[in-house]
Length: 116
Image (cartoon, rainbow, N blue to C red):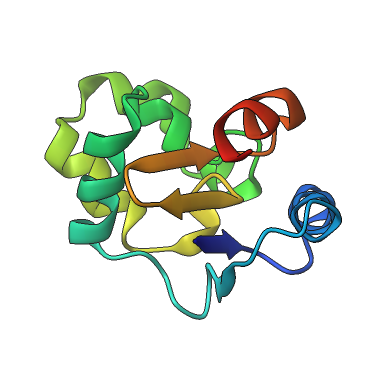
């Protein structure tokens, strides 16, 4: 299981505590130092069944500065994935990748259901 996070993010810290509290083994990856590639993002998006917007950190400063709320609807899937692959701060975190299971953000009930 891959746990992709930003260590300073309080949600990521809660998620990490949750994983450890449930004795779930994972390898950790820093989303800014090792930004997901276009290929990884495309693969995770395809496996997740989630709308692509769920992969964007919509509450992040960079998202707001770039006015992506207005731009995303006019961008193709490929353009959005390319944009996400340019900067880890644009990507929703944490992300869990475990085989065909891909989760974005930390919702305890969802993690409880999908990771137990």
